[in-house]
Length: 390
Image (cartoon, rainbow, N blue to C red; front, side, top):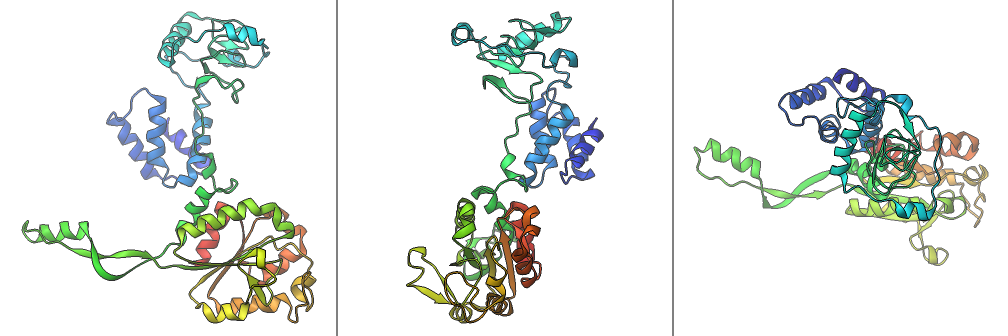
C-alpha cells in the first residue's frame, strides 16, 4: 500500500526518498495514528514533505491516491462507483431548502453514515435518506442539505459540507502558482546570508550544554554574537506602459523584499535602463539619480535584481535616442552593460508568462544582454534567480 502511495507522490513531483517512506511506516507501526484518514494525512505530510512549497503537490497526490472517499474503506464497506455517478441535479426552491433540518453535527452524521452503509444495498438517487446523488440526504453529492458529508463530488456546490476529505489548504505554496507576499517571502529566504559581528550578547545554548557536559556538570556559559542579515540587495523596477498590468504583483514583491532584507535599495526606470533612474514616481522628471552615481555609491557585493517585462521596441535597447520619453545619447544596452560590469551578481525577473517570451524580440535581446539570467516572476523563477545571485 505505502509503496504505491510513495510512487504517487513521486508522480506528482513531490521530492520524497525511501528514508521518509521508512519513517512513515515506522510511525504507523508504533501506533502514532490508527484508522483515521485525517490523522494519516497530517502525519504523512509532516514526514514526507520537507518544504512547504510542495504542500499543494502533496495534497493533489493524496487526493489522487485515495480518490476522495470513493476508494477509502471508512467503515469496512466500499462505496460502489456507480452509486456515485452524476445522474442529475435536483433544484430546490428557497422554501424547500428552509424546511431541511441539520442532523446534529459531524459525529452524528458519521454515526448515521455508518448505519446507512450497513443497511443500503443498492444505488440510490434523488431521495432524502440514502447515500446517493442529487437529493436532500446529508450523504452524497450534487444535492442539498444544510449539513452533510460530500461523497464523490469534484467540487462543492452549496458549500454546506461539514467534511471535505480532499480539501487542499496550501495551494498558494505551489511553485507554479500566482505570486503572493507569503510565498515570495518563502522564495527570498534562500538569499539570506547571516554574519556574526559585534559583542557577544546572545546565549549559545548548544555550546553551553556541550561545554557544561565536558566540564563534569559545572555550568559553563557560552555566548555568541547576534545574527545580522548581511546580504545587500539593489532592485530596479520597470514602471508604466505594459508594466501597469503587473502593478499588484510588483507591489507584493517589493513588500516581501523590503521586509526580508535589512540592506535594500530600489529605483525605478521605464522599459530600459538609461542614464537616469528615480525613487519617487510623482517626481520622476524633477528628482532623478544618475546611474553613474549609483555605480559609485554601491559596491560590487550588492545583489542586483531587475524587475520588468522587457516588452518594448528593439530600438529602445539598441540605439541612441531610442527612449520613448527623452533623448538618450547612449543606447540602453550600454547602460545595462555598465551595471553588469560593475556588479558581480545580476538577475532579471520577468512578470510576463514565460511561454510568451518568444513572441517579443526585445525580450530575447535583453535576455542575451544579461547572459540568460532572466527568470519568470514566479516562486520557482525567484528560486532560480536566487540560486544565481547567491
